Length: 295
Ligand code: GDP
Image 1 (cartoon, rainbow, N blue to C red):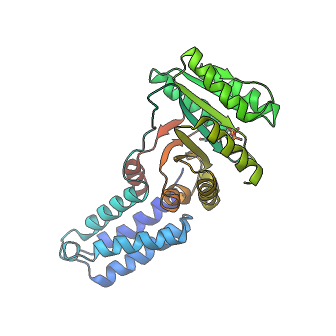
Image 2: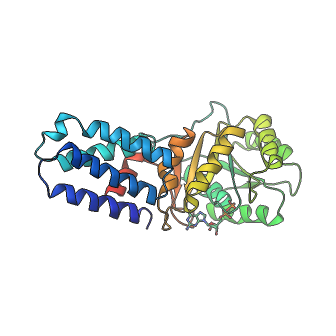
Image 3: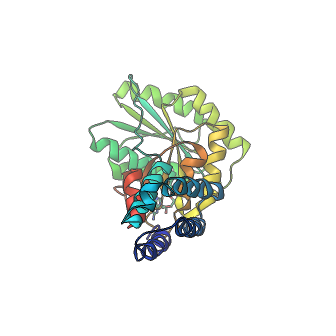
């Protein structure tokens, strides 16, 4: 399960502290060193871990903790609050346009789960009473269009496609199609590559300019840890993103991506993918994730 290592390590650190009663500054320093090690082992970005521990230490050194009869509980509470803050503090919602369709542009590297999450998201909105449309703008592999059609059908959501045409034109036509057919949400599946390259970014920028999406969501694979965070940073710098969808949290990811991506990019995690099935999608709640990590 995700975060297993980190949860285990943190619970050991706090167990030692619980056995001690009143704590001294040196005890807190020791605990903070261990928390920092646990974060680094969970593949949390170096600077993020350092800043996190500095912030927790500052709060934990206050007289409230030092004079408390239950200092361990107080420190756990501080860590819990800071973890929540680190991941974005509140649930980040999708921005809807006042005129239809609200356009969500999905991007990401190949294999991250982009096409699957286009369908998951469309299903999620359909269940809340919306009328989504999916559009196949990943034109380089015929299999990608077919894959979108298959998952679209599973989700019960129509798919707009124009074969292997110009992705910018397809996106434009999809907007007109959505307006004509009363689809209030349009989800664009765009091309993925194995690596970020200028050609891919240029195409995404052109789609962005042509249809001005309300949301550009980057799909990243939690299993790839800091690579996912670096990918997010590059996409944000070159394209501009509004948030991320963190996939494969059902795997045994150490958690580094979940804990670092918000701090590194400044953009919130909006949804998490928790399995291959279309209903394995959850809005991301930083507080719930923090509680889960702390067990
Ligand atoms: P794309 O290349 O980014 O469009 O990726 P796909 O949507 O084709 O997904 C790549 C693989 O990851 C597929 O085998 C999916 O079933 C799988 N996948 C996608 N999301 C998740 C998830 O949240 N959990 C797990 N375990 N697998 C996922």
